[in-house]
Length: 468
Image 1 (cartoon, rainbow, N blue to C red):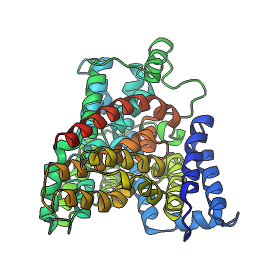
Image 2: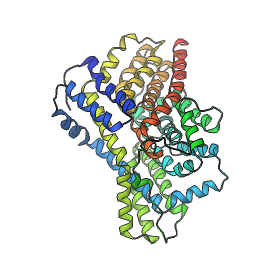
Image 3: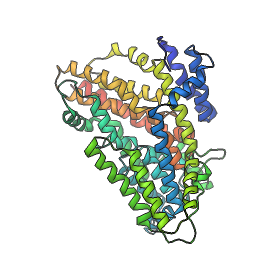
Image 4: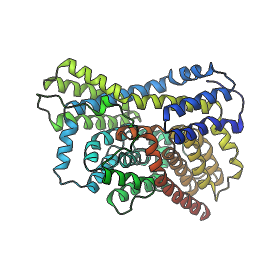
């Protein structure tokens, strides 16, 4: 969708409407659809602009890639359940004398381990741990929080992920960063300054271990789960269809925890790591396609009929569709925000305030606002890094310095912070999907935790800027 006019404050209307309606109605699809419709009217495209927006936003290579990735992840999760792999894994974990605290810590550890894909991590951890989490009366909101806060925050901290390659690649040609090797070195040195993701991951561990007590809406959700046995509130709508959550193991075959669960996961991880080393890209779509096809072959060799394998694959696709629909509207809204120059407007009204002492703080806040408004960290990075990092180099005389490292890290962390607070975020949507949680309930219970870490991060960046 192309819009050439500069809309100023009006460019904030679509995202504002989406966020307001999401919290007011608890219906994410409705909220996003209305926001998109209002957005095209603001842009002067009329009602015909609505289908044009959807065709333009969804009929491109980027969304097709996401769609296929989600389909293959859904199929792989369906295969895990049909072979009894999830049940076998749950029994394996439960034999270790589990408690509520240990289940949460295992979920936290798994999120740290599956770091290579922020799309797969929340779906994998949520789907794998959900039955155990339900058995020990852990609210779906808590599981979604654990999944969400160990996906993007971990991905942005590990140097050999798609996130690292993307962020580092954006800095090539800035200051003394001449090539990909310099850029990755720049990224790695900036990791200790990436306060929000580091504290987010640590906070999950502290909450899961009981060192920090639950507070806010999460405390009520946990009370409801423990005292009333309701892992989802009355009226809540889990963001995963029954086709996927209700798959039963296929009777009459002998399955293996290693071949039906561990091996496919190792295949995905191994393929991703090798791809990063050879091509600087994790190739997650290709990794999940390979794991899905290999597991289908294993299932057939184990005696599962071919028609049963194909029908299970279709259940996996159907089960992931609620998340795909929301992602589709979120992508359309993001495309609309780009056309209305929402991010440009946010940057324009704050750029004149930037000074060396408050640069990391303001960059963190601006990145968070853009990510919150658009629901995408990567889009935020593409907009902010070409602005914030050159500004930092200008202040530092073109040299790598604490200010430059802190500015890059603040941009990266601010994008994750905004994502965690936004009902439009793709990773938060997938966390709700993996945990089969009501999406708005997930955002509402996670928001106080994210805000606490966000405020601490702001104080840290203010201190860094003032100390230079």
